[in-house]
Image 1 (cartoon, rainbow, N blue to C red):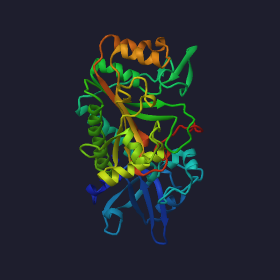
Image 2: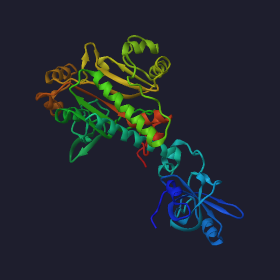
Image 3: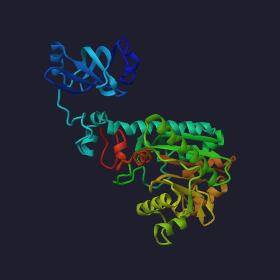
Image 4: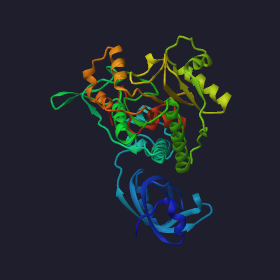
Length: 418
C-alpha cells in the first residue's frame, strides 16, 4: 500500500491507508491512547484502543520512525476533522537515547547555541523548519522572476587563484600545492558572462573571512546574484531588482502562507546625502551604520508606507573599484528592507581603459586581475547587477532576530560543526 502524507488524508475517508513519519507525541489515557505522527506535510492523529497495539505504543520513544496502516475516519472532534483508527504500527527506526529537548512543545526550550549543536534534531521543530521552507520559496521566486526577464542561470567556480576582490577577508586553501582561495562572490565571473549571455544569475555559496560576530553575519551564506547588460545606468538595475524581489515575496506568500509585505511598483529611493540627513548622521559620514539604516526604515514606512527603500549614490571610496562613478558619487545602491541592508548593487565600469585607471589609482597590480580584465579588452556592454544575501532576507521576512535561526547549518566565527 503506497504511503500518503497527512495532508492527503481527507481524500481517503473510510479507506485503509499507510502513513509514515516520526512519533511526535503520545497521549496515554486510561481507556484510549493517541499517537501523533509527524511527516513532511504535518500531523496525523492515530487512535489506539487495542491492548496489544497500546503495549507497543507504550514502548515507542518520541522521534522514533514508524509506519502506520489504519482506516481514515471522519471525526469532527479530531484535529482537522480526520483521525486514523484500527491501526497496525510498525517501528522502522528506534530512538535509544533521550532527546536533549522536546519537539512537541510550541517552542523549543533550548537556547540557540544548543539548538545549533543538535541541529539534526532541532531542525525538525516547526519554528526551525518553517524558515527553510521560506528560503526555498524565495529562491524559487528569484529564479522564476529572473527567467521571466530573460536571465540565464550560470554556475561559477568557488575556488579562485587570487584574493583580489576585497583584501584579506578570504579563506586560503592548499590547491594541489599552490595557494588558492574560497570565492567571496561570483562578481568577476558573472560580469564576464554578461559578454556571453547578456543577462545571468546564480544561486550559490559565498565565503567571507570577516571576524564579525553579529546577528547579521555568517562566514558562509547563500548569495542570489544577477548581472545584466545594455543598461542605461543603475536605475535599470534597480527596476529589474524590484520585479525580482516582488517575485520572491509573491512565491513565499503562495507557497508558505507567510504574511509578507507588499513590494511597491516603484520602491522609493533617496540619495546617500539625503539619507544621512534623514538618519541624523553627520554630512561627512562615509557609510550608513546599522542605526542609520533603522532610522531610514522607519522613515520609509512613515513617509511612503514601504518596507523597502533604495539608497543610491554612495561615495566611491566605499564602493568596489568596478563601480561606475557619477562623478564624485557612484552609480551604486543598497536596498534596505525593514531597516536593514539586504542587497548591494549598481552599475559597473565596462571599458577596459577605465578598469586600468581605477586599479592603478587604487595601487592594485594589473597582473592579479588579468583573467578578469581580459574580458573587457574585447567589448563589454554597459552593465550592472546585484547580490542578495538569502539568509539575511529570510530573517528579515520572518522576523528572526539572528540569521542563524534561519540557517540549517550556519558557519560563523566560532562554528564549523555540525
